[in-house]
Length: 476
Image (cartoon, rainbow, N blue to C red; front, side):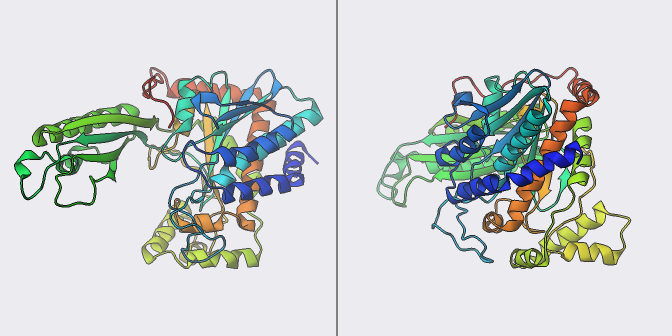
């Protein structure tokens, strides 16, 4: 048995502890930084496997760094465990049915994501013990990837300093080394305060905070014509001023996300949104107060590391699913609308241009995308991830692990329902193996680490990671 086969066997031998921990996290879904129960499963596995754990890093109670070994290279693996609000879902059910009405749910697969990072750390650490291999492995427990951006706060506090490289991954409905970017994002709350009054008897005495909030939204709508095509601005009403229509609303609160391919572009756009908020307050004679929430950088893939991940995805191979498991996933793919199915067909054809139309159709109609998608390096960006902040500080690579039903979307009830299935468990193990094998490459091949650092230096030449989260803003 060669070294890589041995690492994969270690992870298989210890699979039950990873699976049980992931299922437990699925059953205690928590959001943003309040992940007290979820992180305990990480502590439990890592402590019994001999890692030294530093808890409460980055001014977050439930963020950690688990370390084993000594010397260089120092390799980091990032993991997440936060859930999403409003995505509670009965497991294994082919229709939307909350387990707890309005409750949280693992609609982005982070119960699997984080535990695969732990599995990778345990797998490579155990192998290093067996072989007397030198180097340091660090597993980073990162809360609040879903909009709170725990890694950005960790980066601000220097938690990732000293790494030679970092590895990450994310659940998906396709398996692919991640050669694309992501959008930088800034988030803030805008609180409008006005003057209450009787809306019929004395409306002239009132100053409507709700009017101000609505005018801000209208202003941003007009701004959309004057943004770059790749930019995105989203908002939500957190407080619309109450339920009494005959009272001039004296308070309203909006939550804004501003995204662009680069942080400087996002910052410029954010400043324009701020001016619109100020203008809305001026027009309505109200007051506006901005509360900065969080931000994260765009992700930039390291080419040599990403190529190493791509090779290891080939070595791990497709998920070993039986017909019963493929049929199980049909309950979710049957819920995908026709537009979603056409999207799958189009992306399959684009990814595999050498296949016949019939082969493409069969792949697209399968419940699972078992064939690995080819690695493509591109500047195309969509969505946001706080792995971006890590990628600006050290050579970083990640991949998508396709254990979700084909055509379904992240942040969906389908992903939450699938989160405790045997398919998800096999996805966990495959992802853990891929991360561990890539860490092995870095530990045993100095040229890979050198090439990764050279690529990092060329990519970021003349660019500097500048913390954009103000010093007085704490995770909350």
